[in-house]
Length: 335
Picture (spheres, rainbow, N blue to C red):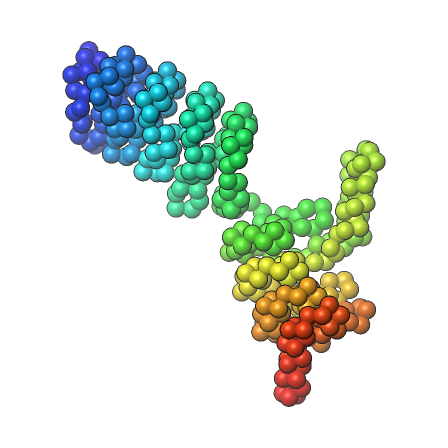
């Protein structure tokens, strides 16, 4: 009886009622799995992209109940596979959420966009992230073959809003903000600072790294792992802070954010190296000026006796040398 009704009202829009969305017979047929009715409607010139008030199309309706045969039919009729509903959800997202591996295959074969994310007031979730969160590993593998955006910022935001510890440390003392500063990820750095990440955290000394790694049984399993252990100890940037790292890497915008959130501009490493030294040594003139404007102390000398000015001279950074010289003259004039 319902099939007859659908066939007789193929172009009739069903008015939205209380708690429901307006719909078309085509969408009902796809939702309930009536493939013969869907065939008939499409053969009689029904628009394959008809949608409800909430933006859900016939393809969405077929997905909700896993009607793979109808999905295949709609794809043959060139249904819009990247059309989003009002929540920004695509058919691919639903297929990834529900774990419909075969349907994901069909959508990817039809060049579904793997980078359209569902957005809400807090963060956005991509099909890849959704499949990962729900442990649909076979789907994750399929998506990765399409080189999707990694959405690191959205992943970080999702973890933070779910109460992850923003100051959790690795075996070397590295935290998320240290890694974000090293990689130049401005958005993640800002996000971590907004959620009170410690911007003055420092990497462990080599001695501390050694102490923390020795109890780990995997460090002595093979010569390869022993090599990794020794490499980590040798290359550990002992006692570096996020500001040290950002200055060394030349990440000006990250330096600005760290200083805005009161990172200690004169925090020194074990050898009394402040962040200013790295900027002077590596020629990051804009960062030098910014640090000086934030009252970086140019009189701090490293354990080997070198000053920021001496470091700039050694590395032939004339502009920085002039900037530091002007600062020295200014300070002397105000003594």
